[in-house]
Amino acid sequence: MSRTGNPSKREKILDVAEELFALHGFDGVTLRQIASGAKVDVALASYHFGKKLDLFQAVFDRRAAPLNNARREALHQCQAKAGKRGPSVEQIIEAFLRPLELAQETGDPGWRNYLALIAYINNSPYWGPRMMSKLFDGLVQEFIEALRTALPGAEDEDLYWCYNNLSGALTLTLAQTGRIDKLSGGRCTSDDFEAAYDHMIPFVAAGFRKVCKKAAR
Amino acid sequence: MSRTGNPSKREKILDVAEELFALHGFDGVTLRQIASGAKVDVALASYHFGKKLDLFQAVFDRRAAPLNNARREALHQCQAKAGKRGPSVEQIIEAFLRPLELAQETGDPGWRNYLALIAYINNSPYWGPRMMSKLFDGLVQEFIEALRTALPGAEDEDLYWCYNNLSGALTLTLAQTGRIDKLSGGRCTSDDFEAAYDHMIPFVAAGFRKVCKKAAR
DNA sequence: AAACAATTTCAACGGTTGTTGAAATTGTTC
DNA sequence: GAACAATTTCAACAACCGTTGAAATTGTTT
Image (cartoon, rainbow over all chains, first blue to last red):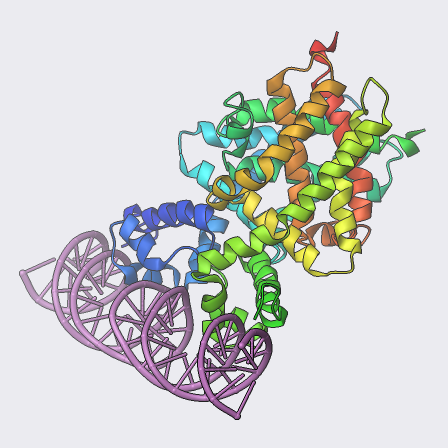
């Protein structure tokens, strides 16, 4: 079988692993559950990916580049569209969030599981530090740099704490726990990323402006 | 042994379980690891708490009431201090967050682990819905009610999405992943709850005001 | 100190886990 | 279609899991 061989079973393993890891975490899923869900023998996961941890990493890596490209492109596009003064805070946050929604509209339901997996990893004291940095820090720093330009005079400490708030609000949304559904009596639904971002963008932008305005004069 | 027996070993098990569950999640910890950390035989955990899941629940339950009382008292106190028009958004958010910091100042390091455990559970699509509601929904609704009063004319949908943003920002902070430390090059530290809340309170308050201002006129 | 109850340890169980080597199957190349 | 390589399954391993019953220890009551 050549370089681009029959991807059906290999990809199916990644898809099922993605879904189960996002729901139960690394230790809450067994290779047999994954194999069973993919209708495949247990040993096949080891053959394709090696150890269980390597499979976990492969799932995490698979969609990182496409996602980063979409977000980076959105940032550069809104920067190009903006004048010499650069894009507004709202436009930068929008470029940070909307591609996550577009990923959903590809029709591939795996994207939603992947985003929930990112939420699991990002929120984990064990996995977070050792897995998030390599893939996402570069892009995040680009966004923070853009925000620094949009908020002249902002101090670094304020800027990073604000980003932490943004990252947290986003993470809980990506986790899709459905808790807001019950709390709001059905007025909000975790599945509705568009509504979530519609509210998150002005919310976060106002927060950045408020906290980073001190030194802005 | 009477009702308040020697708590040393039983409490030690809870302490170690709290720390390990917060770090690795329910499935990432074995009863033998907990017993080993508590310098106790494996069977003792079963004797005191029953099944592993019961121990998990016991850890989660232990500090819920003290925490809820502290937060409820903070809310009522700021409501009593405020005039007939009620407390401001900032004051309500402050009452929501600061007791989490006070809990740390009791000197009991277990509180930090407990808050990280709450972050783990709240962000988990599996555990979140089935464990958070019973213990915390009542208090959360009280806070949202206060916010509704402080933001006259706010629509429910906006209010709950804003709370979701607050909850997310808080959750990531409680998780203490240390990621902001690296991102900020040491300018921010995950351990510093005071600095986190100092930035989170104006950030979130501005967000609530912005998103909920439409109908306010 | 005898009798009793609560706590803790000991020892072991059946079941599940990740992993591996060999066999079987499928696909590709000559 | 023969020879070969890639894929997939089969079968099994040692290690570890949560749980339990019985024994041993400790604490309390009389």
